[in-house]
Image 1 (tube, rainbow, N blue to C red):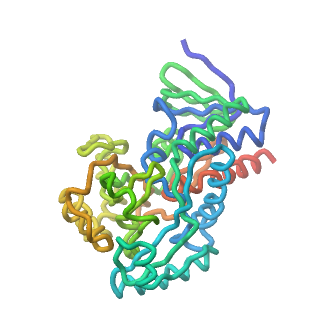
Image 2: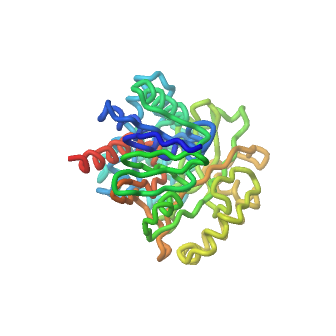
Length: 402
């Protein structure tokens, strides 16, 4: 027997963006009935729980973009939340390391970008770099002190604890199979259950385009999954660096390159790379889904983005299959590491919106219908930016009610 339960707001997706939005909705509209649905057994199960835990400062993002604004605001908001909720975090800072003259030129552009985005930055000479990080080799570097590390699963848990404390409801292990929008309500079919709400907000991450399609909303993009593969260094290397160590990114490539990351548990990871994923939620070594693979190859935008990035894509694939090639990317700036130092570590999957012309959506992307709002593209630094994203969504909801 089906059951109809009236809600004011129904949210889909229990990652950090969904948790942030749910809490802020309940704070703004205390009397509202708010339900968050998550198909997994716990929150932060996918992108939120499989990232490197970096609190980004916003170095790379175009001035004036939502990414730049949300990241800057979100970094401080995340730290404020950690302080209030006693969540461990560390503002260890980031070093962007140039290993040759070409990359040194790239530091100048990044320095200018930091100034434009109002981010504190300190150029470092070769000797200053050596003093800061004796195990790192480079000709110059930029130090960004605002960058930090945290466990975003704990941040998400804190947000949901506050949400339920205000009377919000969270249900796990419940999957939305269909959505129907009517003039007076929106209905979610979840197995044999039907849930009605005045408004729906989708923060579905890797499934963002499929939730959009359930409502028949046309979109000029599709989610293409990119696997980010990591390794972890042995415990005796936990003190190998005191900062996060990043290469100077190639402006022609869409991702940031393999870096050394201090984790909040004291360990150090290497990664991630960026290879096409053939299963949207596949975190093991070998992953394949016929549905997800067909979603890739049947989409013209997929082939266009592959063509545009063919050279780098082949290198990433080679290094994914050939561990020594992966190692050489990090040995550019940390030459003491050996093949045996790269230990297995869980991969992550990045939900990347790709337009039909093959361009990658670089900023946050939203879509709407009369009774729904969808977060369509929320790549890194979405975890850092989760609180401002939630506020942005609440602003849009409030405008509709006004």
